[in-house]
Image (spheres, rainbow, N blue to C red):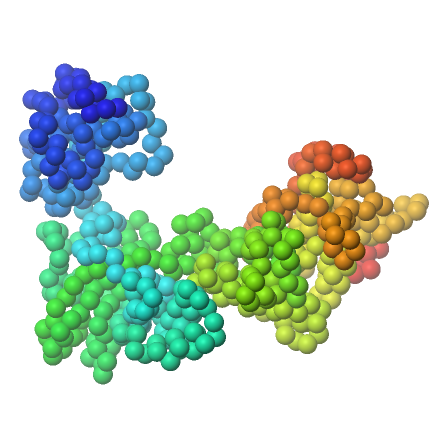
Length: 592
């Protein structure tokens, strides 16, 4: 709406008796900081009674009201910052905007509901019911500007850390140690080369300042009264020390009285409803005993905020599972499916990934591979390029790369599968997969195996997990039934009928490829990724074949024939271990 239209709406709100003594806010007041900061173009003032208090409230309308929530302000400055969710200018944060459905045809009802929620927020603050929200939302109340990004894992012990300022950025990074500093800085360099990495290694000590990571062990009580601005040195020290155990206090004092006094601290503050905040404190001009020691000397204390890029914080926010950070996955094959799958495994929370693939990324596959076009500057094997890209995007994830065939890596001892919680093969080559299945089947400490592959022209994709205590293996799918009159070597899971050729050539011999799209590869990677997470999370104990199928239109248009399995209903495409197992299998015998 235009401003004059919203003024008319504001007049309707006055007449609706949403507030006592309601009146329009003057046009001049709409040019004041409170209105400009919150995008208010029309407003009304009035009175509401809350817990025996007569409070002056203001209801402000943004340009897109009632398609956007109105703004509510409490005008009594004694409450600004003194109760939770009441901020500068008296702005009341009464409702998150995300996920709210507004009836734009009934502006009075929207405004009435908004005021009711704002009044309830104020009431809970006045009665002390929401006092813990000062800690629940401490990052909003912590004074200071953002000064850097945290990369280290937020653990449970007080530890020395480093603050590093890369010369090519305007922000600091907070890291666990020198090695992580080099890793993070190398990943952030505009041009990454061995010579540049060497320069970083040589100059890191000049760029780094020592500090402490301090995880509070108890959910703290907020200071009373809660500070409106920067905290004093004593308030900061008391807030930290009161919420540490005796052992942790001694550890803190040892570090604070050490030869190298910490110039800053990153403090982990547990939230009442779970999770935690990280906030920063800078110590300048330290004289005598450090402010965090038992007896403080003098220092200038300054608070600051940080951005978090530690996986422990980001993984759950992205829908991943924190326990998966300790899991180790071996991924064989970094092509279209393997590339997407590697990224999704990391996004699901996998903290240790080993990539095996000797092939190079070819330009012909750029439009179905997660990496896109290969580099002209430093051509590398797909495993190395993919590993570098994962570490660039997701610092903190450990990625090892092996640019060799899996058979060679196993023979040479480069890869020890017993070190992994899951082995995934996305080679797309049934011969390689069957060889890997047979090699690993008899190992005493064999982890679960997951094979995934894709059929041409969008007809479908598959994922098979094989677990030691469950019957069946990959070779069971290639074992004909004992009563089959004319047994042939064919994958019984296939949607394509046997005896057909699917490869195509765009530029003659040596350039053959199987036709499928990036969407097909991504859908198969998702299928395999979900199954991998189930296995690693302990929710899938038995062997399972899981498939998705397309409509087959492009397949039929190419003159190709589907198998009987393609005619099954989608709900019948999950097959358990006993259904996968085939008596007579030369690898597992069709039994556990």
